[in-house]
Length: 236
Ligand code: URA
Image (cartoon, rainbow, N blue to C red; front, side, top):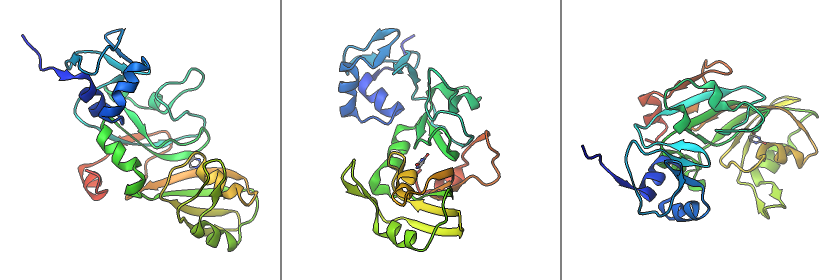
């Protein structure tokens, strides 16, 4: 019996957040392995039964699944880690090894994380042009004041990248706690924004991404997104 075959570059694109153009480089870098051997060409044909891995994680273009997880502290936002448990270890779904993470959280950050096997969906969420708002509850080491609100609205200069952050909304909840909404996801962004005021972030918890909120999902638990949530998020 003959199985439907797909070009390797299309398969990788459908199963990850890499573009078709990126796949050539991934293959040249020997990051793609097909049935145990480094991939040779973007034109190589694969079937649903071929084992294709990217950096050791299995890729799959099986039915799309979308999952939300409430990340506890002390887990790595990665699919594999040599030292620590990862968020994938919390999941019991049969195709959990095909999932990738949409927007990482730091080791000690808690809260809403999204995982999927749908590369197009995660690309859309992550695109700067989508400007999806991410809201965090932040606990600080020093008291806040009104000057933070204006500074975050105007943007904070990040010398390393030589850029100014997009306008962000800060709501001061109490002297040491705030809610911050960002439309970007730069490396350690929240900590670096408060770092501008030499104010250390003691606790960071992501409560929402766009219209998706944790609701009552307990720390360490995960669930599939509903069709309604996907439609409301405008990302379907
Ligand atoms: N900003 C940070 O500094 N850390 C996170 O985990 C998320 C956003």
